[in-house]
Image (cartoon, rainbow, N blue to C red; front, top):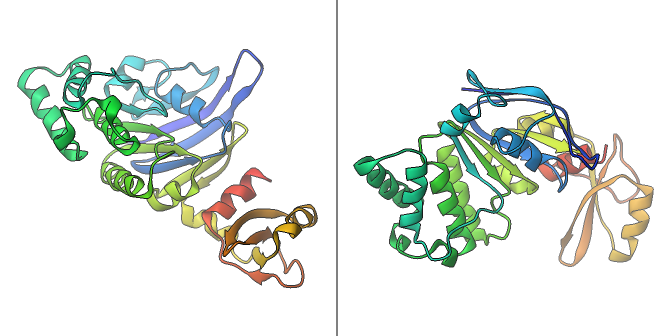
Length: 287
């Protein structure tokens, strides 16, 4: 199954154009949607999740018209929003059972499904605890469990790892990777490492427009031989920002290392550097 998005546009009543003729072809597997805050990612996710109307354009999931046949979309959709509400005193077991009931799953089949999902996301031992008492990582794993109810063909995950510690992020990565082998999983994030580690295909969106689409490896190839790095002092950062096209920087042993985008050696002391996905991201949104 494939998700095809063509010329999707959305302008809010305040005049903000959140999406401008967005077109994407998203196959089965993990698909990363990268962009800074305010780029339009969440608007696109809400439209695909049937929670918001588009102004124009089309979107089809297999033979389902996503914009017109919302009931059919919801039957095959799993959605984990950036923030999802929980009943403060309800256990994970009872809440997942409630969600399965809302999806129309009945009787012994529902009980078996709920138990299977709790095992799958490694929450069985915590099934009787209130979800509101869970850690951030546990809540996100519960969110994936509820998104998997009903054997979805499309799963949308919006900014899932913000605030998770490294161990929780790794557990979440492993779970998403397993899920993405058989269904379309759209991972919307501004964290470059999430996409680099998980996704075989990706798009970068900025100011409502798609500025890159393809495999992460293809994105890296576009910058081969064009990234230069230099260790500088903190006091020099502003001068280098004004003189060069600095696309990323990081601290190593307390000293900034800057990456410059240039077709040729930009100046004294610069060394060629292997491009990273972060370089691709910033080069596209700064273009």
